[in-house]
Amino acid sequence: MKVAIVHYWLVGMRGGERVLEQMLQCYPDADIYTHVYDRSAVSDAIAARPVRESFVGRLPGAKRHYQKYLPLMPRALEELDLSAYDLVLSSESGPAKGVIAAPDATHICYCHSPMRYLYDHYPQYSAGMGRLQRLVFSHVAHRLRQWDLASAARVDRFIANSHFIARRIRRVYGRAADVVHPPVDLAAFGGGEAQPRQDFYLVVSQLVGYKRVDLAIEAVRGTDRRLIVAGKGEAMDALRASAPENVAFLGAVPRERLIELYATARALLFPGEEDFGIVPIEALASGCPVIALGRGGVLDTLQDGVTGTLFAEQSVPALQAAITRFEHGDYPAETLRRIADTYSEARFRTRFVDVVSRVMAENQERPAAGGLTAVPPAAPPRPDDPIAMA
Image (cartoon, rainbow, N blue to C red; front, side, top):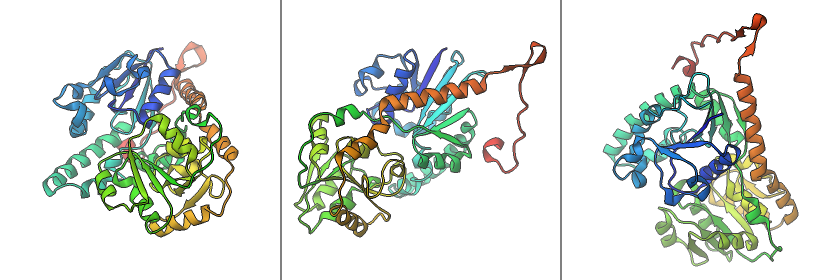
């Protein structure tokens, strides 16, 4: 069986690329296709495999400014020749699922999220642009949504990384999705002797607007609580300039330092709405409780009063109240680690391969009487089904 994995772009190592690593363990002979590939920015496991770029990767400045070529990516995907592959796995967060597979191939999309800048986060992206840029983006986004909806019909089965994303897939594409939670490298965070908790709260995040790190900073302003912020991003300078003295910014930290922070923090603060949320699982694996916004993917993984506390409203008073409630609770490290164990890399591989095998079996033609093959007739599209009518 020949396998192709289509990943949106390979310019760093974040959650999507960690999922790709595990896919490669499941299918070690797979070929990788992507829009833009920076070999120096990916792990050895990915760099060891053949990686083919779409024509976007050959355009000027693509490695740094790949998102500016977003309008060209649908055509670039459709020009990739995947006719020799029996199984196509697309890893979708940017454009990836729009490839054209062979008629008898199986195409399964692992969806981290439908493209946020076209749907849920479109108002925020648009609001940050100038007038002319906003006008152009409005036109481009409209056309990309049309293509995105049409290309969903090319997928045999969607896999979502959380029930939150499964609902988003149903709302956007009108398709059901299996849920297979992303893999978390639990071994890196759960080892070693337990260390005493210190008197500081922790944020581990990319410093961009929708992560809402500003809520965590304002929640400790005027209190004697200490906050350490690990991570970097475009909002770092503004956040640091307005932060009180009891907030420390570490920037990007190496893995060893991050493990130490998880192991000694009083709790992780997680005020943003995420599709899944790998950072809270890393904290739990380290025996660190989590105070999180009770929306999005964390509802699959966190339990109020068990893993820490959840707050319903994305506001400073709600987060402050959650911290106060947390400080009157008890969260045994053994319980937190046991919950984290259900999100291991091995469990991901098992569940992912199970879904792929089941879908491939369903797609195989079954022998009918007389030795012929019976193919069930396709149901006619409903007039109100935008996917089927696209």
